[in-house]
Image 1: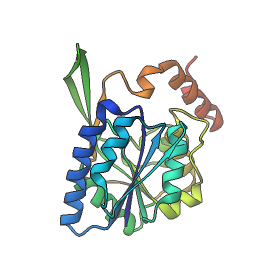
Image 2 (image 1 turned 30 degrees about the horizontal axis):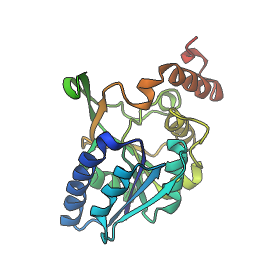
Image 3 (image 1 turned 180 degrees about the horizontal axis):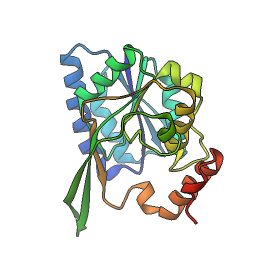
Image 4 (image 1 turned 90 degrees about the vertical axis):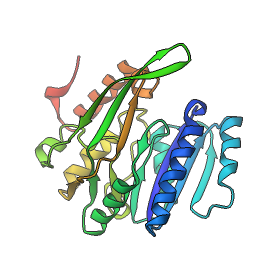
Length: 240
């Protein structure tokens, strides 16, 4: 089974379109007889978010919990602990994921990978009044795994998948981080295992429009990345 874990906070602007995309991915997985579940952790949900959940009533693959606001990595830990799947995927509500990449990631984990990472697209948007228009895109092809490089840099990207067994070996995401918890976890994971596989499938589209957590708090991103670098003695990458 594949468990897709989602943390949502203040997602009114994206939630309706996200649920449309989620239904398309779910339909594709069902059509290919893939066993999966979706676990959404809603942080201090709005009325619109709660209303949006109702369209999933009765779907056996859909689960959600509501919590007081916590870090995204606390929500990821919560979702993984709830997960029944052998393969875990994460999905941000403002991004797009492709079903065939999720399936490929699961297949690679079944074949022995501890972590699967993917090529993906970045699309940048500019806001004109109430409208966001795409202005630039880039295809990201991460490097083939090397322990030296992956213990120094965040090459796993925003769409990586992991085996739940491996997650339990590496341990929880550090919930003190607001932004760089995935970087911290992936460095720890790379120290522990070399079974990182680059999928040939494009995972999805990562959205950059200036409203994301890392974009809104760039100073905090630098500070948190510096903490990770100090923690793992990556001293040449510290930004003063």
